[in-house]
Length: 275
Ligand code: DGL
Image (tube, rainbow, N blue to C red; front, side, top):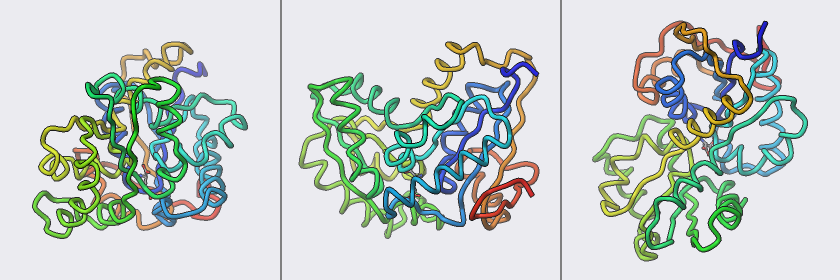
């Protein structure tokens, strides 16, 4: 079969990657997608580089079982901590979230001061500083680790006006307001669910999400490699998780902006494989 008709593999530690899938569905409606959410081991963001790298290898190995034509690392933590170590071991092009979001922020900022919020691991990796130093060395990056946000979102605590969320966000965002950033990268794919709450606290700040930025990068990659599905048929999506498929189906709709139709398949958490 022509490789261009193979699916695109997408993974995240949990539900967050669905915010990227939302944009893929909108801008690449003819592509088949295989999504893996490592719901048994979420969150990744407080773990060591060694552990995250081991998990990421297993996530990609699982997607490779579906003969994917490209992999979207829909997790800033995985992209920041593990991509450099694992990418060379796979014969498939990969798109992450860090470089596309950094490029977008560099294009948008007017005062050259860009904030980044992300998991502890993402901030420790300095991936955004490294990317910006390469593409826009004059832009200063101000990163803040927000370890409580992804777990809150996974627990369904993301509604605007939730007092717990507002309190936690104020604590994390106050230092960035003081730094006068005019652009803020939501450097975790869980955070678009908090978009309205963040925008309410930082109304003058341009917010950059992973989804649109990495979708643009993926379209470019597919076109350059002549991998775009040109069948004209609507694409399909298959969901796989390593724990609690019913909860994923129930909560995932809020991430993706539409009901999760069809089944969500449970696969083994340790070495994900088709059962
Ligand atoms: N969605 C992941 C990211 O973009 C983070 C969640 C986690 O800590 O696993 O970084």
